[in-house]
Length: 116
Length: 112
Image (tube, rainbow over all chains, first blue to last red; front, side):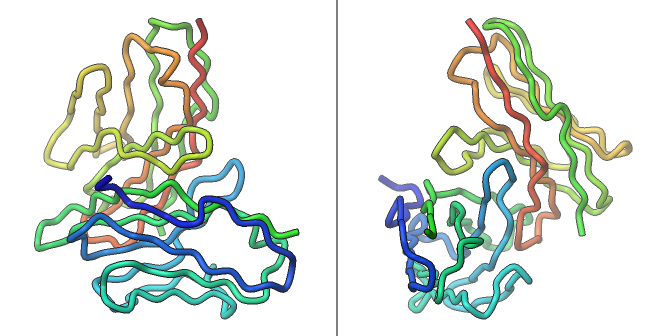
């Protein structure tokens, strides 16, 4: 499978616990993005990496959230001290930006987080 | 930032009919116009896109038309099938943008 993959697909946790999600982008894609989607809404941007550098973070990304892409390949998104408001679908996307002008982003299946 | 609206928010058509979804945006610098399809429990799937130097693009039963002057673009689906039932999102942006700003979404239901 050459698409974007995410793990786990579903996560149920209790309030106050830490959770970590993983995303494997399409190989050779240099950009990786994290979005959050709540029920009935479109995805909202959280952060993105170009190679291993985290270049932009949304105001939605509170200090309880941290993302890494240590070797410019897979990425992890960690949420510390989860709150019920963190319940959402967390989507990962990747794209290849190499001098051309247009940014086609390809999404993974998402990780659905439920905080009890 | 970009203000993006989609109309209608829900659309029900009979199998075989056509469906049209319109996306209106505010940023005149936008030059890349993708449409995504999202089925229940899945991530958004890029189904068609258009760039600002083109007015229309077609791929089998789906097409996108762009009116840059009026700042809107539309998704056209002909000969709809039950598997077209999904939520559709537009995400106009500048080609160099880092993030996509998604529209409000349109739920399409194709009935038999």
